[in-house]
Length: 183
Image (cartoon, rainbow, N blue to C red; front, side, top):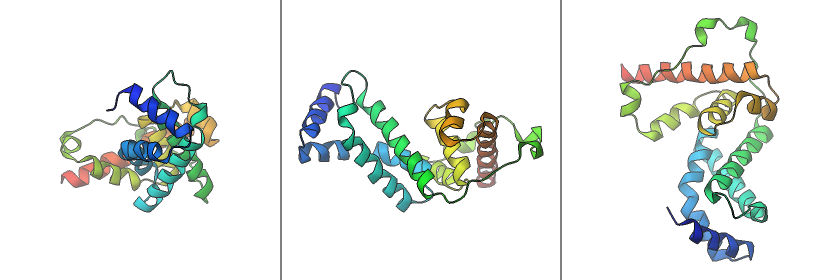
């Protein structure tokens, strides 16, 4: 990882319109940003679109970054928000769940097993991409981005209980998919 001071030099150069510094930032953070986008996307092409939108927002909003905190953390938040904006813009329908029809046995804890330890991250991302769009989005926001159910509910215009259901549904689906791989 580059020193924060070197990243700040690149950020200052980008603010001044230096295309070379923009390329450096893009190349340096490409894998990190693509990883975020792959978790929210349903395909590699969709992830590439999200990546482009994310970097566009990063470069367009560099003046809002205050040089005090971690640039990478700020950038990840911007990209995450861009991915959520992309989801809202392109998802035609929302998977709705009647929580009264969900039995408590669906709301189980997920336990990591040996199969997960043996899987490559690309395989795990592939399993996450197979989740329904809203479930995938809520799961990513909660597990990877650290949003609370309250924050997710507010951003996606759903209830906190629905957010919790989507996380548990994702865990159940992923657990079942991993069991199938294990067999």
